[in-house]
Image (tube, rainbow, N blue to C red; front, side, top):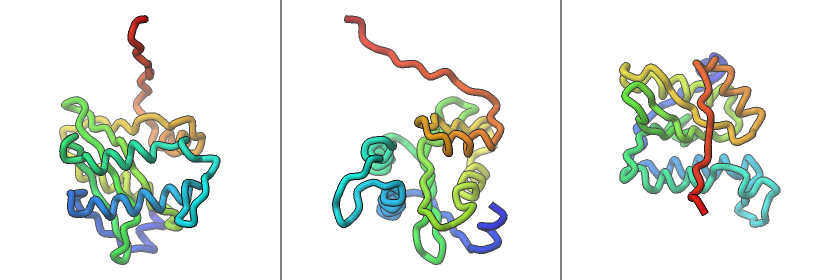
Length: 158
């Protein structure tokens, strides 16, 4: 994060409907960087292995779902966004945080910046699951989590 703040001037804005297109642009560039569809067409081995569709739907429906977030800009270019909601009186869940590549320390900056904007009533920020991604797991563990919540699936009885 120190590298990022020393090298770039970053502006954060609330993620409101008027800026949803900027968040979508970040998401699309993130997807291409992860090996998703490119403007030239074609599929990648990563197709379907990320939370891209859920992230896109969350941006489109953020007002109805009562999600809040921020978009981050470097030189007027949208480079990252974060989106989440309160799940308990003392816990905010960060559903999505995406950034374009090429900015060392950007994601750390976004997490830190966004967390400082949240009301002080939140003791915990839940960063959700790592989707089996080892790099994402290490990134999330670097924040020294207070604990882990066991994930379960509920299936209807047959």
